[in-house]
Image (tube, rainbow, N blue to C red; front, side, top):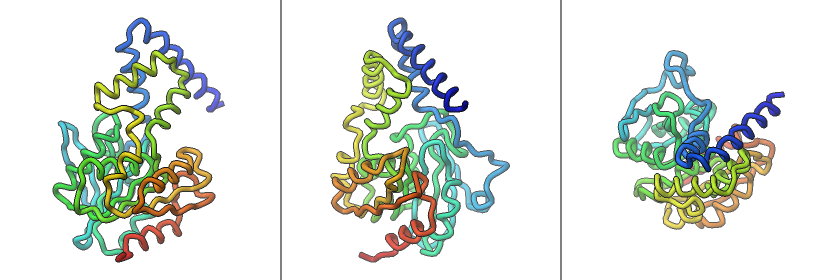
Length: 282
């Protein structure tokens, strides 16, 4: 029943947007973009934080008049950034953090725009990467671990800001091409060709990017850091071939294949391999 209602709701939105784009293109574009960029879940309640987040050192930053939240677990001078994905928050790292603490390094988790305890209603990779850079100016990161779109953000961050302190990047179930995510959204709502053109133009006007160019193959060409790409063959949210695409273009990376873990990749053996990768002096 839930799937049926979701199908009816999304298709109804699509029909409305398709009609609206002929009457008021601007309103249709803003509505379509907002549905795509505004998460429906992933927020946290500051009075009911998971214990491991409540115990962390919390620090609020501001970027472009928008506040965002970080959590810090103190260690040595080496710093690990944790970058979660869509409709998630820093709580997703609960099982990984004890393993990372074995390295002795400082760990900093960032709540994405419109997620966790961070402000705003809109999520986008460019703003998320700007959050990372704001924190990086105060706490110089050496390693980045990103899950899903957080992994995509990690690649965009390093390609854009060229942070010389970054030595290694771990990607968990990360998409290679934004175009695939974009086209899945178009298909979900059954948007017409005029509406697709309007959305493409919106991305160019708003971000000065072409959807087809927002791809890992363009990002990794300028990344010198070593990469560890972990992807599950049964991932139904971000297909396994996305991990293959990333490593095919990123010569300094290796692909670790799992089976049966799905998109979350929450697994003790995965955590151990991440720690081993970060600890390897080579």
